Length: 227
Image (cartoon, rainbow, N blue to C red; front, side, top):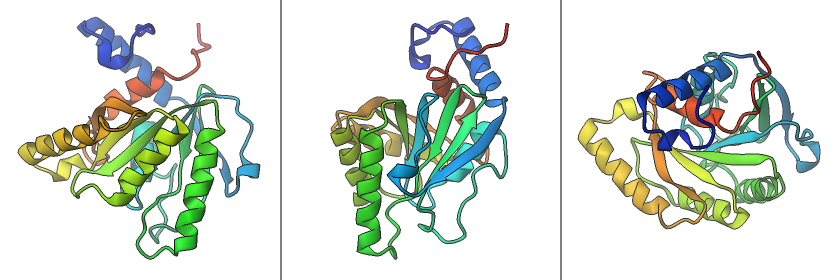
């Protein structure tokens, strides 16, 4: 079993790393079911499991990442119209961890009132959910950081919720530009108190970074009941 006293990023032996990767694989190979979609805070299901939330701009690839992590093609479904989904979707992962797909933000055509409603609802959820262990903040590796992205980082700072930046669609960026992008985003993250001091590179198309993300998220899951 993986070393539970240190995070995956701190493991220094190959045996520990391999054990952590296997723990992540086993967790995400378990059952994963959509259990509820909440459009209002009063509709949130009771907290029974640690929660990991996924946030990001519309079209950043949140649904694709959730599907890649769980090995399911249609578990999380992207809307045909960006910015249309307006609810928190809860997925029970093996009765050990709850994955929460948050509505996309920053869609240009969304009305101002909708954007304000999103911010208010998301802040109330983030601030009032003690079982929320981390927010995975997804950023598209192909495009520049947007003002809405930094606004969400400030929102997470105010809510005092730890967040980890995940660059998506990294397969579409060549190594040198990707390295520069990673360095620039890390510099931004260092300005935010709630940000993890590292980020993840991922691609739902090629599988890049998926095993590592599974291992990192497994650290927050309840212990396995298998013997």
